[in-house]
Image (cartoon, rainbow, N blue to C red; front, side, top):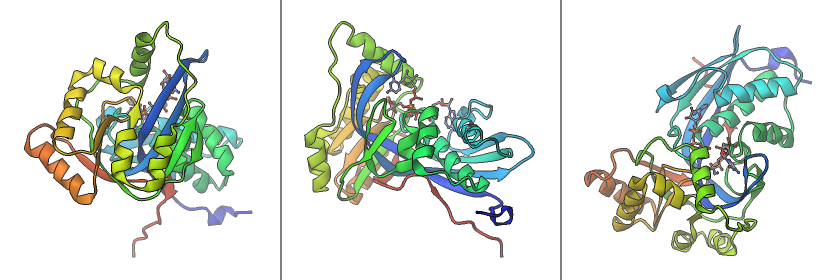
Length: 312
Ligand SMILES: C[C@](O)(CO)[C@H](O)COP(=O)(O)OP(=O)(O)OC[C@H]1O[C@@H](n2ccc(N)nc2=O)[C@H](O)[C@@H]1O
Ligand SMILES: Nc1ncnc2c1ncn2[C@@H]1O[C@H](COP(=O)(O)OP(=O)(O)OP(=O)(O)O)[C@@H](O)[C@H]1O
C-alpha cells in the first residue's frame, strides 16, 4: 500500500491532440450519439495538466486560446478529476493548472486531452492507482474521444468512439495542421448537419476499411494519403466554405492529402516527410493562405506523467 508520505506534491501529465484518419458515421442512436467507426492517431501537439492539492476545487488555463476555455465546473479536466474522486469514494480537492498548445474547438480533441491528463494526474496524486480499464470507463463518461487520449498511438474507435482498440501501424507520419480556417463550428452542429443531409436515407452500420488498415501496415504516407476519409467533411465545408478552399490550396502546395480533422474546422494535411511538411507550412504562410500553421508527427503517446523538475 502507498503511504501518504510517498504521494507526490504535484503531478504533471502531458496529453496529445488527435486526428481522425478515418471517420465513418453511422445512424443517430436514441441517446443522441451516432455509432462510429473511426481510426484515431495521436499527434505531437500537447496540453500539460498539473494537479496539486488545494483548499478548493478549481482550475486555471494558460497558453494558446486560454481565453476560450472555461475555468468553472464545465471545464472538462475539472469534470474528469471530480468524476475520479467520486468513483473512488471521495478525495481531497485539487487545483488543475492547464497549459494549452492544442487549438480550442478545433476538432483535435483538446478538451478531451485535458480530461485524460487530469485523470492520470489525479490518479497518481491521490494514489488511487486504478486499473486502466476503470480509468477508461470514467474517461468515456466525460467524452467519446477521452479514452483514446489515455491510450494514444493509432487505434480504431467504435461504439460512439469510446471503445478503443490498437491498430498495427508502422512508421511516422508528418502532419501540418491549420486550425483557424474558420471558427464557430461546434461538434454537435456538424453532427446535426450530417443528420439533416442524410435524413430519410438508410445509413449502414460503419466499419473500419481494410484499405486504411493495410496502408497503416505499410508505413508509407503515399499509401495512406488516398484512403484518408471523413464523413463529416462535407458538412463542415457546407457550414464553413473557407475549409474547402483551404483543402484545395493545401493540395496545390503539394500536400499528399488534406482532410477536415474530426468535426473541424482544423484541416489536417499529410506531407511526404519532414522536409515536405516544412515546405508545405512555408508555402501556406508565405502565400498568406494561412497565418497559423502547426507541424507535428504521429503517432505519439497517450496521456503520460512528466518527470518532476526539482529546484536544485
Ligand atoms: C468528432 C469527434 O471528435 C471524432 O473523434 C468525436 O466524435 C466527438 O467527440 P467528443 O467531442 O468527445 O464528443 P462528446 O463530448 O462525447 O459529444 C459531443 C456531441 O457530439 C455529438 N456526437 C459525439 C460522438 C458521437 N459518436 N456521436 C455524436 O453525435 C453529440 O451531439 C454529442 O452531444
Ligand atoms: N479543458 C478544456 N480545454 C478546451 N476546451 C474546453 C475545456 N473544457 C471545456 N472546454 C469547452 O469545450 C469546447 C470544445 O473544446 P475542444 O478544444 O475540446 O474542441 P474540439 O477539439 O473541437 O473537440 P473534439 O475534437 O473532441 O470534438 C470549447 O469550446 C470549450 O468551451
